[in-house]
Image (cartoon, rainbow, N blue to C red; front, side):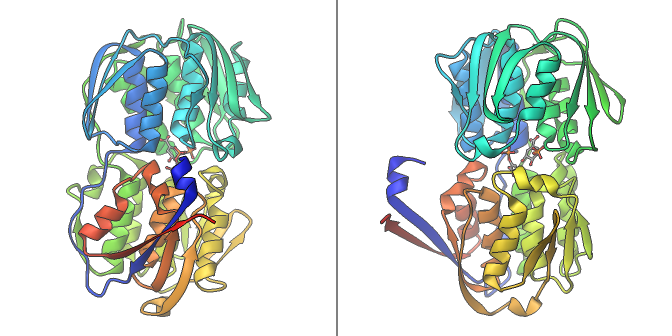
Length: 429
Ligand SMILES: O=C(O)C1=C[C@@H](OP(=O)(O)O)[C@@H](O)[C@H](O)C1
Ligand SMILES: C=C(OP(=O)(O)O)C(=O)O
């Protein structure tokens, strides 16, 4: 956080919607796809043009890290990157700083094995609490000289300029990003690489599918041998021109705002046209206020905060299962959702193991319950609880700028739909 930001505290209070929300809001480009194609373009020799891209903190951190490794990343407009590279990453002058951008941190931890030299990959205080040990162990298992800090960042990698070849096993249960990271680096191997899952099944398989699709667009050859194994040929990557689809996780807030206010927000893209896993949440959101009694969040993890806040206004309670790895996202989201929902109304949500149960209370609509929502520097907590403010008076979101991680224009988007927002900015004590 900048020094100036540390001196001031910001908060936004949402005015409940008194009429259905109608209008057109285009979600920003997909964070997951943008950070994949930025890296793949950097690993390709030539010039790649990326349009429809997300410009947010997470993608700016990825772009900056690539520039630190000798890649030319131009930004001709608000939604484009033009990446020119030799296909080789050069040793950076200092540690790579990746904030709390999980995709940048995990993807680059594997990619910098392709650098001839030592690279330190680090993040902010929040990132240093997000596990990376399984990915480092997998890299070590194929002879890559790297180490983490007690299973967490910073990671130090002594790269040799190549990824090697053969079979690499990875426990992806904590993060599918570990799998994606290995797959993308593997195409730069000295021979075929086989990536095999160990441990329990991974959630968010849809993100691995995103990775394979992005790799293929840049000329890689990936064969899925079975549900837990991929074979990657040592093709390297060729430059490509890519148009990034809108962000499906960002779309969930707009879909939820539509159903909460009985409105119709036009996103300019249909749910079935997304390739990202969170688009699966569209059907559930459309079922509101008759959400099912149990929702398995494992394949739509980033939509769970949206769905959990929606569940507070559902006709019946909802249990969220398959969400254990929400504990190691930007914050412990299970704890954050339970705590902040119950801050609105005691007992509105609680944890049972790694399940989240939302009691649901449609009578909350129309009440005024002044509540300051702690957002834990988590963009999805901020964006999700803003939805509660559409139905309950007095909902204030603390540190609203944290939405800049993936959706800098979120508050402007709500305002453009006629949502009343009151900004409070105070000099920090
Ligand atoms: O691969 C990706 O782009 C992502 C994978 C998911 O993380 P994990 O696989 O770490 O759960 C998701 O939560 C994140 O927002 C983006
Ligand atoms: C978990 C998320 O992002 P990341 O893991 O890329 O930091 C997210 O965007 O919800």
